[in-house]
Image (cartoon, rainbow, N blue to C red; front, top):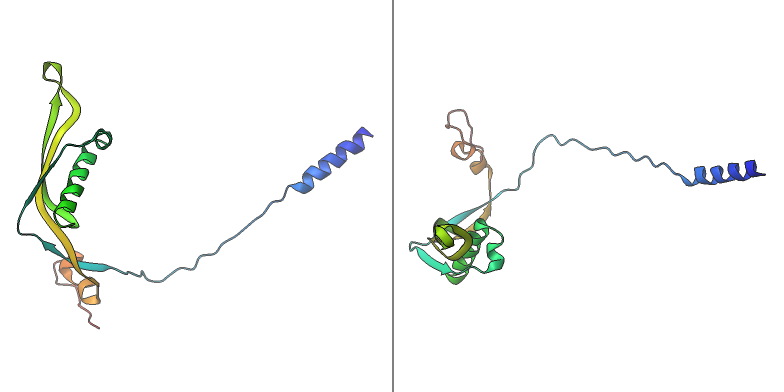
Length: 146
């Protein structure tokens, strides 16, 4: 009786296990497709200067986080530009006993030129085949036009 009960339990366990095999096929594409967008960068002629006293939460991310925070606030305060070109930072640290630096930034000042992206457009064959854009010297490249 125990033998039949054991065989029945094994049969139930064996039938509950299902193995599924799935296969997939990929189709090779003979060429690469690009959808590139280019834009003009409008740079402000005047430099801006902005200073903040970073919070403890910002400082926990490290010095690069503090720099990104001051850049973000400077861009928002000066016309909501897209990027800051030529950023220069002046960082003031808090000194501890015996002149040892403590990882606390008391203030950070950034100076740079705000810039905004304008005139977004698709890149055409003339730009793609331009030797300067492709990094070539221009002797062996052909420019295709639509």
